[in-house]
Length: 197
Image (cartoon, rainbow, N blue to C red):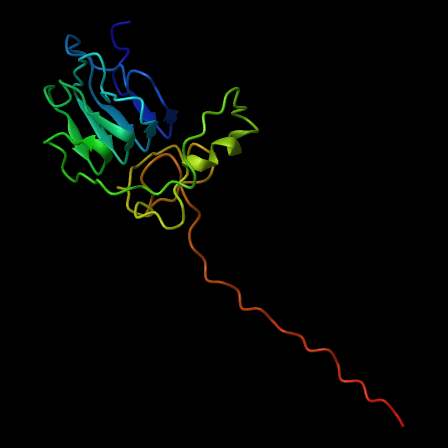
């Protein structure tokens, strides 16, 4: 298909322990590929995997990477051709134990502080059972909450189906609910009862 990679968007996905890397992606020989957007995805790799995020020497072209989390328990790299393509932008991505590309506008290397990562659940019910993947959400103490770039026409929902606000979005595939002020508790004292003599 001649125009398969025009105006393509990859957003709010979660991948865990992809053996060869996050993306077998790159269209160095496809002059018709443009306006590809890859944002708010979370990629997690256990310590036994040393991935190239863009694997198999693939070269991205005309692609913007925003608000993604690339997390390695051990170590990883973006890939040998990650920054050799044409018209690519990397901005506001998290590289935890991953060497950022030198062209990244705002490389973030702090721990995302997931709730409880590491599980490899199988046969996930994407309609009714995504809660088994809740360990890959950002915890309430994550520095990446409300730290994402605002993306227009973002689809409106995160990986778990929760709404994405118009501003102050999180980095990665999960969107934490906005903090609300605690409701003050009302203490009701039992009525005093007089006892006659």
